[in-house]
Length: 190
Image (tube, rainbow, N blue to C red; front, top):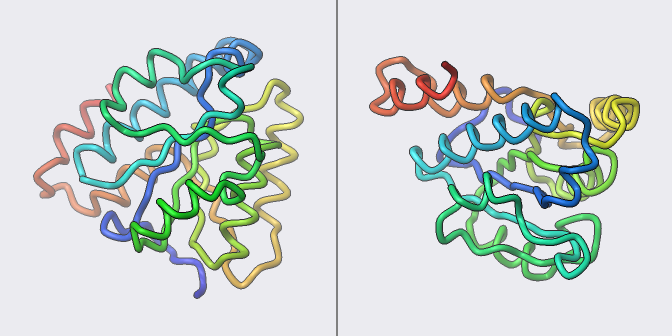
């Protein structure tokens, strides 16, 4: 299946990757604060639009739990614990994603050059339409982040990865200013 040009809220899943305090502490300011804010915008938007959310934690025994600013708004979203870098290598993640029967996966989280990159590659290989919100991902090093985005943008696959941004994702999910959630979602941007 070729990559879609635009996101469809009825076909989307939001995947929040490893937004854990120890990993976030290694990301320099002000990028860390922007990352958290943008991930929160995506989570709020997905919730308002009934888009399923999958959340992962990389080795929580060593890296801790999801950051409070993120976990506080995830409500009862179950967390998938993993030790593999690619989410798609986790049986629990793959089972939950498959059960949703949606073809578009929006990725946010950390770190761009490790877990996000490997997840994007493997989901693309499984013919999911992968959209990466570049301003809702980060690495400890800006060079690593940029390198990962470049690699992902140049993937040679039947389902290329779309590098996007938070506002584009939110407004593609809405599609029209007459949408009943337009005012609620656009308020997040102020």
